[in-house]
Amino acid sequence: DIQMTQSPSSLSASVGDRVTITCRASQSISSYLNWYQQKPGKAPKLLIYAASSLQSGVPSRFSGSGSGTDFTLTISSLQPEDFATYYCQQSYSTPKVTFGPGTKVDIK
Amino acid sequence: EVQLVESGGGLVQPGGSLRLSCAASGFTFSSYEMNWVRQAPGKGLEWVSYISSSGSTIYYADSVKGRFTISRDNAKNSLYLQMNSLRAEDTAVYYCAREHSNFISSSWYCWFDPWGQGTLVTVSS
Image (cartoon, rainbow over all chains, first blue to last red; front, side, top):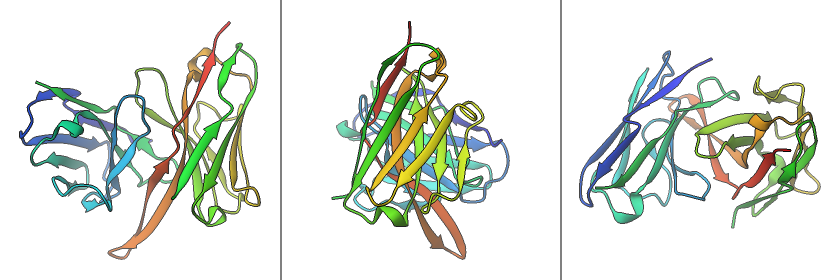
């Protein structure tokens, strides 16, 4: 099974900060990497698919990069509505996909 | 509007059974693969099961194989998860999620979008 790790597990940031979250796969997954945002009590929401493609309707301050085993999600200027938990997901071994453990972004 | 609505969650004793449903609307349900994903309280996301658009191909996570059964009724635009021999560790919010695929740069990619709001299953005596 492909294992996913994320770092950091949590971070505190201020509105306007640039935030970077890292996701690492236990083996090469090419660009088969998606990012989701989850707010408390809500379902996950797709942000980025295929490592760097922005989902329709998602603000352009979100961006994704990487390929192989190392990936990043960047929020260029953190907004109040961005405080949430972020998960990466590998779809290389679809349909048996796996998620990272999550990164919680909270207010500094 | 594309929408998925889960139902059927609740409190069940260890060893008991429960059947979850997911009602789909706003898209051609029969054209899409579907998945169940769960999230234990305060924990991360765990993929549970997959079913192809026709229902002919099915996969399960090892943690539920032999106990859970995924199915669908395309005429009713509905997805199901029959859960038997439930254990305390099955306690979680269960989400249904549509699998979306697209051909990008000569490869097929897939992702989950949208997700339902989730239904809570609690296994406890």
